[in-house]
Image (cartoon, rainbow, N blue to C red):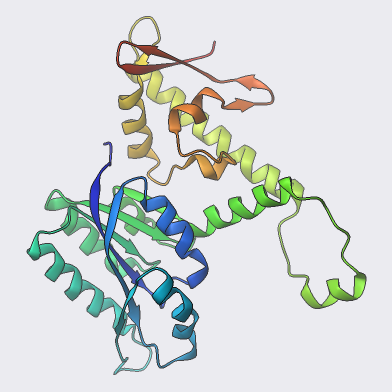
Length: 266
């Protein structure tokens, strides 16, 4: 399913999503449409909630204060759900983005889909599979941030850091070798999924309609993004056209009349 030109309500659970991810989240949503509602839920009387203070004015985010009346309970959940249903009944949006790593929103995501509304989820690696699968798209914000940081390091000149400074600032991070291994595993998985899709849906000449191909990619891997593979462009056709493993081009794309087609490079 292609998702474009939507009017999006972005609801953020500040108990589960930190400020550092917001620009990435907003950038990803821009490919799906225009974000109208921007609401942040949490108890901002606590230090944890103050991390969002600078973003409120910069990005025109509406802050919704919710005090936790019961210790150990996430009060933001109920407030977000009530607000979401209010927005739903106003009928002014056709897409919701639930930014949370909490499985409690799985039922809400399913409700949106049952009402033929697009639901986009956004969260960290810890986000339960049930919530991920309940969404039409899922934005893995921590993985996208990590991919962005790796890409920025590649274009920068390596400047030696004084030893004394390393002791104060150095944090455990994945090594270059580990990053390459993660990237290779992800790429091989994508190729496996893509080959299965093309084998099942291509015409006798091996060509497949590209939009159908992408619909199947998102159906099987709804968190797919070229950026996860170190590709800076949002253009998925450009990504697959330039996709290589160990120097070998995996896919071939061509333009026929007004649409693109794709096939495996045998």
